[in-house]
Image (cartoon, rainbow, N blue to C red; front, side, top):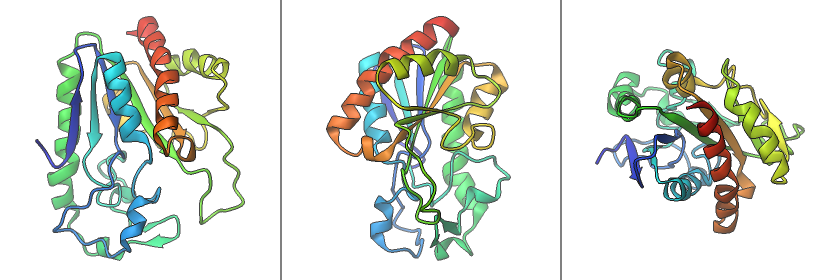
Length: 238
């Protein structure tokens, strides 16, 4: 057991599901200085990701690793020297408890153990394939005029091999797909840059729209759609 991550082991297929922002947990000894209801908001957690990742791990017979703390405690999908690691503002909300927080302590306690476990799991695989799972809010409070109509976004940095396989399959399944939307994986792709692109490991990065995976029916729908897509990508690339 680790407070930095939760691991779901459902089989030995060489697929690793990675969900950096799957948890809204804030340890008892950390005070973010925010109202508790914000922990159910997209600023704290990628809504629906934990459930979809667990369903996919069972469906595919593979392992999933879920970040163990809220992205407001530390953002696991950032480079180690990125200013956004310890957010003091998020979508218009102040996070006052982070202003004087010890970044090194948060790194040693959560960030490094999480990424070390990801690397260990991948090293144990013969021909790994990664599915990176996130979700996005359809509407930002700080930019209400921005339109985010996609059902799912596909994000990647330099390696778009899996994206090119997945996008037409997802469209055929009836989803409105955003290629590098609602933001570009060339800008926000730290975990995949580190564990996939740096090692040439093929991966698929997805962003599901949160209001579509906020309940059990939506989570099951997306897991059922994504399972065959992941297997097709792995079969072609791993």
